[in-house]
Length: 214
Length: 193
Image (cartoon, rainbow over all chains, first blue to last red; front, top):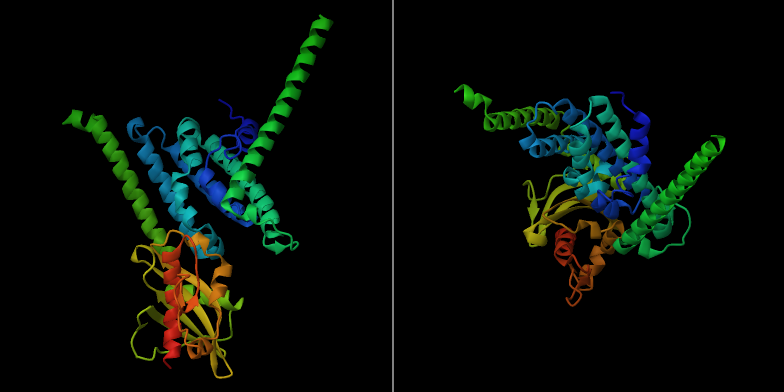
């Protein structure tokens, strides 16, 4: 069967965006989006784990008995999370420190286990790797955008660069995280519905035109 | 016997064991390859304090000739001379669940007084609310140690109703105790000199 990479890409980034559509990985989304840089760091770490675990799960999907698939997936994910921790501690200590406790918690991030279970264990290696990449990108984009909004409004800075002295402390706090997340989900749902309605109208018009021609 | 090897029980156990051994081995190798030695961690901390790597940083012997100086507040495990400044690595005790917080303190001597010029976090044990301690928090500790001693205040207390230099941190008082104790450990050491 031919892999539809375009569908995988749009699924991961837009249609089934893990953060804004599926509402998965909420804990790091709320806790780490005080700065845009944190979003990029966390997103990159999750993307790496997603790609690697999806590839391995896909490779071993015929070897792992279905009865022990969940513990096996968790074992694979935990290994890659430990590798990410070691790599960040060695080469990017600042990001390692800013992600803190949330880095080992990637092991229990629903996005990774969900993709291993629902996609990688049923598809080929290339498709699984692409799914990991685009799901990770969707997660990274959502976190970075949220982080940017909260950083600009809450600290008057962007990527650590001071923009102005105006700050709204609320956005730097946990209540601000919930509010921003809610607004993002609402805007995303509104935009999705708008596009879906336009497409529906367009296809209805096409059907009418075809009928007229007949 | 043949049935045993074909059973689900055996297959499941064998697969999980194989994965465990393979990943365990892989992580053991990577852990060794990517290990960050204590010297590199110290260099990183010094770089964080000064913004760049200083020309020289000499590790000084601790006064008692031992590996650490311990008092009622905690332990000083390292002492460096960087230019005219002295850096201390101090671990404060009595944190949440009996854990500790380790800080680096840059102490500058001005007009015969010791002044704490910069404090940064090095690490912690068993503390779960460290995200509450932003960079601004450690600025509370930037005081003239000699003045504090002469004014009879002495050491920091995380409780608002206590006497001494107050440093309240609502919601994470136990961890604040350990952070204060790390600073108090150095203050006591310098005050006793």
